[in-house]
Image (cartoon, rainbow, N blue to C red; front, side):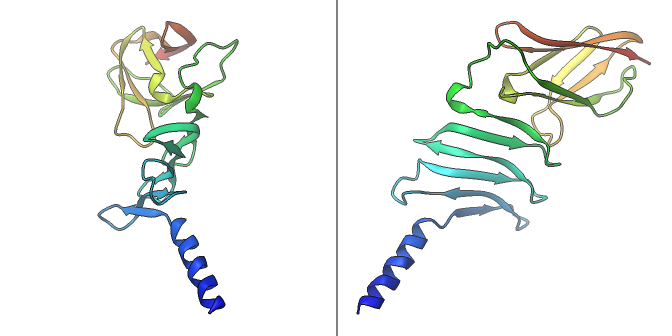
Length: 177
């Protein structure tokens, strides 16, 4: 009898930690929810995936809100953002470490060039860009890039990166062909 009780207890303990899994219509895992308490569906460890199987985002949710350390990746596995949601609005720092990557090595007139911007510890949706010569648009449905730059004339192009509160992070100079 004792072995039945132990086996039943182990079964239920394991069942509480089984993740809930949602799938893309094509069969790949889209996201998992790992509940510490099966009765609290508003608090869980969350992981989402791209269709290629690489992790898209990972972190904890408590009472329906993102909390603590979160990491988000581009579809190629490069970190898009990593930071603490408990201090997400803390923009003011002594210095900023950032990475800026253009899709093409050369900017050309009227050619849209996608780019990605990563500022250490800053949530990517707070990052803004401007250009001195053309347009900049944020990309929401692109798994690899954040913005697209389209210069409208040849010559010098200044691409600026900023945060809310007019915090200028960088001004990068390019020559448009």
